[in-house]
Image (cartoon, rainbow, N blue to C red; front, side, top):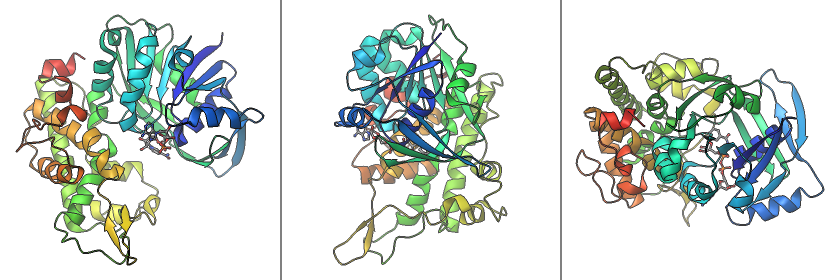
Length: 400
Ligand code: NAD
């Protein structure tokens, strides 16, 4: 039997998943992209061609995959028809738009997957699906399975590497009876790599979101900046100094303290997946990091970060100023740090470093999420903390 799946999005990840999934014999693939005229353009480009993925496997071998989705559309009714798995493969700020658009057409017993979910995915999905949420299962993968980029829109995408393993958590709605096993089915869609690792507790995935990295590094670098343009774009990760590393480490400590407190409050619920960012670097980038003597050195000597610079805007005289609206802040604060702060607040854990960084970043974003040490700012509804959706207690957090 053929299964029909829906992929939402039209960027790097959506291109990859569309071609990969469509190349599997037992899958029929629909694509929904709401952004500008992407659906129309992409459909035209594939009229007489297949979508091509140039793949570089981790052992260095290369191959090409050619296939194409059945339909690419902007019309949610067409896109969702007959579908029992929906993948959202867009940056976190675009999730809300897809939830709104697909909800009227969702059938009971649908699996909805954030690929990646990013922090707060489950809170937002539950809230926006309304009554339908309890008939669905909501899953979140911790990252994209591949490092990938579009070479030619609609036609050609490149996979530069596969993750070895990828964590996934899922919440089964109280009235949801899927006709298929979650993990095996998602694994079949993705293929052999990465190996999906089930994380029992969705809060652990939220606390381990990598959106904790960028804001402390930005604050450490630009928190005291006097506004003078700089002659070059500074290295983002490999230029990290002791102050920045200390800030990141403290943010990670606060997240870890939150996980420990939750485990205590919930009778030892499993939070073992939540580890310190330095430990994560040592495990995750074990072959790329040359010097593992400290968090600062691990980041400075991480080959995966070669040449990556701060997001900067050029000035008229050829210098640069930081771009505080890049996704390192515009995504990683409302869909990252604010979510973790919200979970910590519910756990009753103080987070002075996270608070300080959110307070700084929100002025740059012209938003107000935090007031003092509480998430009571006027713009909290536009972030994805539990509090953004009226969740305030441990029970509410755990009985999602
Ligand atoms: P992307 O930057 O390619 O996404 C762009 C797409 O998002 C657009 O084509 C459009 O379909 C949609 N979009 C953009 N602006 C929009 C708007 N204003 N409204 C609605 N839709 C809009 O994203 P990606 O590279 O596919 O990454 C998806 C997610 O995976 C991101 O969260 C990213 O951080 C994460 N990620 C990506 C990679 C990678 O190698 N590309 C690796 C790890 C994690």
